[in-house]
Image (cartoon, rainbow, N blue to C red; front, side, top):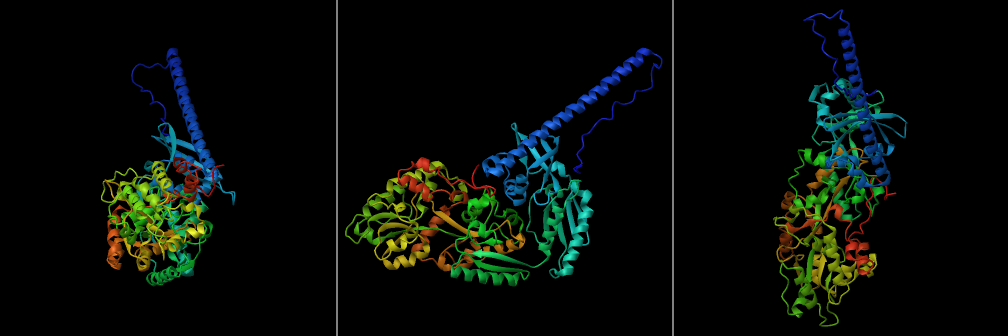
Length: 639
């Protein structure tokens, strides 16, 4: 028996006959007609009940078929199939990747009851856990859209009005449908607070507001906690809030009330370790109840990162699709101390995926083009302008790389990475008229990727143009800039990091310019965004968020020349002012037209794609589709 209180309104039968007019008590025809009418009414009522039951059973079977298909998709790691069954809602999308919801889908759910309400279906879903064998149930919502049944986040009409209960510990916010449990849950919260603070909680806890939400949202508002309604999280077989609900509520309350330690993974660079340890000490002074343990890691695997609450590594798309990373969107939107508007738009978007924020940008590296001024002088050719085109760069490559002597450059252009490919693809058939290119939201298409690979194929390995780096082992490729461009430069124009400006300038006369564009639009520079994330396994996500927010206001070390994610940090640290003029001017021109290499785009221009094109193993169009299969729900590949 569930406790969702679904009812189908039924008539109590026809109104009683009036007693006015002529009496028919002894007329046999009257009784015959009366009996026939009653039989028709009873038969009609039974037929309606039967049709209603049959309709509800058909709807239940449709919902069950959708649940079974979801289970198959999760088992096969088929995200395309799974999300084709879901309503288009970024918050709902993110909620489906949480470990708890994935575990439900894997366990196999049964639709026990379905009620049509307007265009929506309210479904009672049961499932059994593998660990204990306990049976639980929850409410789910579906909607018929163009003949398709879509699993959707909620139906506001189900929940009713908002209510607030004042208690000795604070306030309980809940929906009308949960009113039956308000006192019980409020008493439980009071007991947990008493037990926790008897054992030792933070001094002087302020009044708390706990909200039973009709969705999976979270909050970073101080002294406010969210937990999904027990109707969403778990009811027991009797339709009462289950032990799973109370265990999760206890965990969130104890996290709020007790001191905690965050284990945070960082790169093994000595300077970065020192910066993070300094930041951790300052953070603990401001938030004495949160201690941060900095742990250096060298090339950690996703599995290794799960042992930490958070990390200073950009997550891969595979980590997101596997449900390993916590969605930060609700924190960024609700935290009154976060200042979400204080971010460079082109850096902020580097932390987004499927309309949600998954890692908090901290800084970005914007590569530039260096060029050998001596080579231009020898060729008696004018140096490039900041707003040149791809055709003009190609012409410069051919003219300036002519071998005037044995110790002079032999290549026109060099990029040991894939920045030039991203830049070409972003600029391909660009029609953006916005003052900042990132506002155009042009997705990176297979056509643009194919165009960039075609351009690269026509250049790589050709005399005077650019080398074919696929022939060079990975380890050597990491040191190409250092080995090829120091002492005796082998390329006239090359992609490099701003932090190497002084080094390259000391070796020989150096110029700085931008990535090329077209006759109509400036070039688009790829931005590599760095930031921090929280794992789904974090013991105390709210405490980890406090740490990430604190880091977002810290300036990167000046020697790295990373652009701070926040304009306020760039201003307070004097980032743009302290750049050397010859470097700073091109960077200031390029930055409004810079575009982040988004998480979903990092699977493009891989070594496999480039090698396939240059070796003749695939056409550029074919190679553009050689994108590694995405791992969804922690399952590698479709079975």
